[in-house]
Image (tube, rainbow, N blue to C red):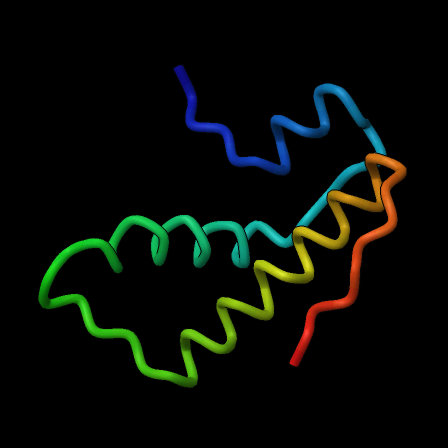
Length: 73
């Protein structure tokens, strides 16, 4: 079975959905690798990943017809 990313899975139920594949890969890799000792991520990288995750969450909530709450700073 071919590997499918989140964006491809969502297109199955919402053909208008798309998201940057590189961002999804970065979020996936970070979500797995940061669990293991020895995998170092800089503060700058973590802030960038948090921004990606926040934008993705907001876009998904909008597609679901929900009003995302702006993130607190």
